[in-house]
Amino acid sequence: LKKYLKTQPAPHDYGKVLLLWANTRMDGLIDKAIQQEIVTMILGHQNEDGGWAMRNFATADTWGGGSRSEKLKAEKEVTNPPSDGHQTGLAIMVLRDAGIPADHPQIQKGIAWIKANQRTSGRWWTRSLNKDTRHFITYSGTFYPIMALHKCGELK
Image (cartoon, rainbow, N blue to C red; front, top):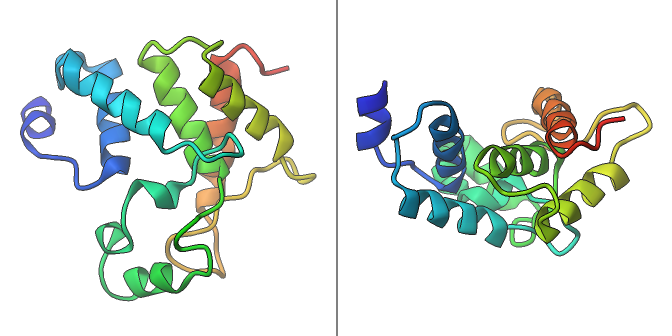
């Protein structure tokens, strides 16, 4: 597994986020310079509202070809996707695991987004990359914000 993760390039920025996360559990997958590049990339993808959008971490074609790519290209927010719970929570979790302090201004903006965008149902919304009839990604879109709050000492 280590050899595979060290030698196979991530297909997109989302894959790089996961590689950095894996490196926090299996040290030595990537060197310090690459770790810093990925941290900088994650911070650079933050939206003005403080959250992150999963769709900003890959192009429609690199998320998958065919009907998925066409669906993503047809979305009205294709050039400016809204922040979502999945990517906001994941970004904060991975940044914290990579050693970015909870009081970092961009982490705090992300935490504020999480607190402001929880739905009355208790979940955080994340639009599916696949179909607009089932949004199973909302499960991770809720789990990741909860973990982000926990990792920042904000879970009450």
